[in-house]
Length: 151
Image (cartoon, rainbow, N blue to C red; front, side):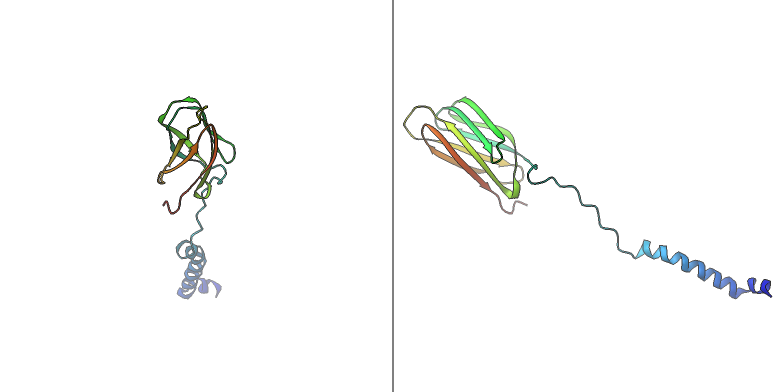
């Protein structure tokens, strides 16, 4: 009787259905389960991320020294005996939160007449911005650059 039961079409159908039920679990995971979330790319921290940029320095009169440092103390420019006129230099700037704070120190010599130092910052993918300081002798000026909606 057991042999006849194993050969019956009903048993064969039940066997096929049981096999399909066992396959249905993995197939459901392949076809309708939500895909795993993509791995997030590792982003550099704001403290270490830098943006390539061009710095344009414009002096109305010659300067003995020009020094430009970041808020953290990184020296971007350290020039001596700088002629009047414009110069462009490449730099890597720490643009955390779309803000850049720089400290400009300039020794403009012994002339008592006021003059100006202009610094234009041109970071990649952001508009150029210019800040300046006016004075004579030794100048120390904080310069703040801020960008919004640069995307």
